[in-house]
Length: 86
Image 1 (cartoon, rainbow, N blue to C red):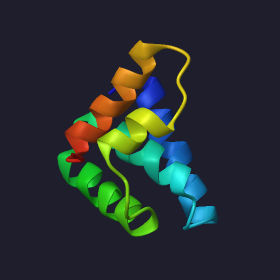
Image 2 (tube, helix red, strand yellow; image 1 turned 90 degrees about the vertical axis):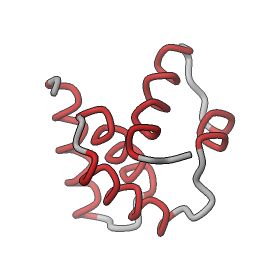
Image 3 (cartoon, helix red, strand yellow; image 1 turned 120 degrees about the horizontal axis):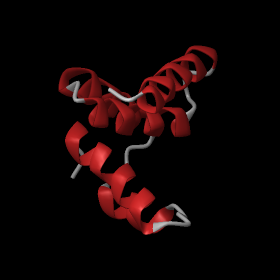
Image 4 (cartoon, one colour; image 1 turned 30 degrees about the horizontal axis):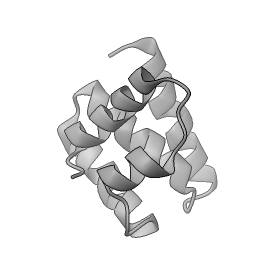
């Protein structure tokens, strides 16, 4: 796991500890755990995200969030795919 992914996991967990309804933190945690190769933790984060944002889907993420670079968007979406989001 890269240092950047580990830091994203740490920061998003801390954000959720402080504010359990912080949807963006759930998104970062889910994508990061997906990219970290921890399917059980990624699935658990995805379940939390789905409780906070029931309409979440890859299509919504791809069209609803702005990215400056297509490669960043592809990387982010891949984390969600690995977490089990369809």
